[in-house]
Image (cartoon, rainbow over all chains, first blue to last red; front, side, top):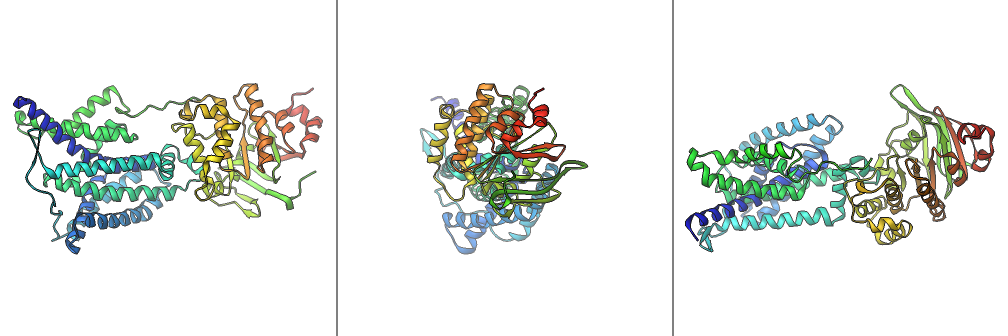
Length: 298
Length: 243
């Protein structure tokens, strides 16, 4: 292969690996949106707190990666359930706007609280994987990233099965599709909102921890939240497969922009590339690449 | 010939429902016996649909009691009422249009407690409505009006309802399909389901019901055996288009 081709493939692979983690964050956003039409502006902060809780569990109890993730999930699920019960449930009949404002407030609160609560505790779990990059077909790929992407991929598969193969998943999709109709068949909305937030807790821990491996502390995890918007809007907001494809698309796009355009313009374009693509797509398909305009017989 | 409330599955007593200042239902009492068909007829805006919405918990009555197997349903959330297998098939059918026929049917079984085996119920529904079997993978929103009505009734059957409330099942359907839908109702009662039927098509409703109530501006103005109402001159004049 010519050097330029190798470089291209390297960028695509690197972007896809990041995309797998983006997908987890984006799914945490989409499950909430689907269940309650609520836009969670704090999804980045949830991910940040998730990674900090897992890191704290690891350092406090000397746990390995698996144990830290497990304990982190328990903690974050508890936090998410309390948030749902104490903050969201009293607001449930209010306007959607107040729910959305609450997420912004909660995001700011989480950032502030995290600096106090986690003061002096290492922010990351030391990566248990070898530092030397793996060379695949002449391309150097860091082991951290491969493992992170593999775990993310397994989570995505598990989540897809959960939504399409399980009884609870069927109920969650019914709630997402039409709350009144879901109630009418005997589905308890509050119970399923709680399940949704528990999922957010688990996804926050996984995505946050994996990102702390893969990014090498490149940028603050809470900024991951900003990546989510182009992903979910490209994906069509309510389509799980669309979200996953959107995440890979944005990951690869950023990587290509970082490799080819950033050197020309002096850096930074990779961070806005996905928004440029977003605007272009919205001109052509206002409901996103994978969203469906409602088809219905009346 | 009122069915006595002692043997009633459902007993509505002095029910009042208002939307803001509009009093949609004003002091309605009615009973539905076990495994019987009871028809509610009356003009548009008489309060028939509101009554069903109150029984299924979608609107909260201002006053009155709704006793189902002796328990007052007033104030229970919608999903709790559905879990008592009081199943409401609303006008417009309440389908999950972006989910498949099979998924809609599966959701119907959520009203039953525990992880009931849905295979048996599915077979029953497909035997009754073979068209649903052929369309099981299709989105509910893409079905024709008649097929959607069959799906709505099929989904209700998945719950093995004790009380099935049908709101205008014939609305917008071709006569042949209307007969198809009405053909199902006696089969349901044979399996022990009571049916509370709201219909514009008063003749078909009265032919299929044992008892009937005539509603006018939120009040019961006539009630009795369906056969007697069918013969009553005032019903014939007002609702059956005779003389």
